[in-house]
Image (cartoon, rainbow, N blue to C red; front, side, top):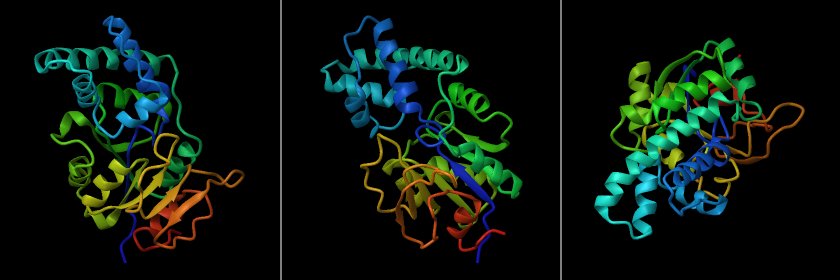
Length: 252
């Protein structure tokens, strides 16, 4: 039976509800800065999230609007750079915070000697800034961003790279994700996967996930357990013992 040695977290929508209140707002501000008519409302952005990676998301959207390939090649990177700058300003201004229960779980894992890592397709320019702002002092040993991988989720590269840097086999770690694309990425890397859905991902096909909740939960306000395929007995609090059971051992 394997021990839980590390937990690999996604960032957007998982540790932070940053898609709706961060990225979407920054994308729209970038469109405005470029004097473009496009604006993404909540529903439109939820659909676009199935394309991972901000620059790829912009390019795909522009293609749908009939923008030529040459113009997309010019606009997409420029818009993405502007959006990243605007997002960093939002982060520095304290506009985004950790989801309820995140700090509790991270503190539990650190106290239990479990190593922490991040596997995201976001840009390092804002990922490290966001982590230092919303979960200051948490020792993420490995942070893999979209800058270090060639393929975006649902490709498993971000998770396989994180495991390589941790020097661990998949059986010794668990992924925590929020979306179908993230689950597919983690499972393809051989990881057990717990999911904490958000408003954008609650309707995703998460049938490959081992455990699905609608939040991290706490004792006073437990989350709803939407699926528990490994019979962890989770009572609505995503904690260290529950994650340990996903690799076959109950902590403590």
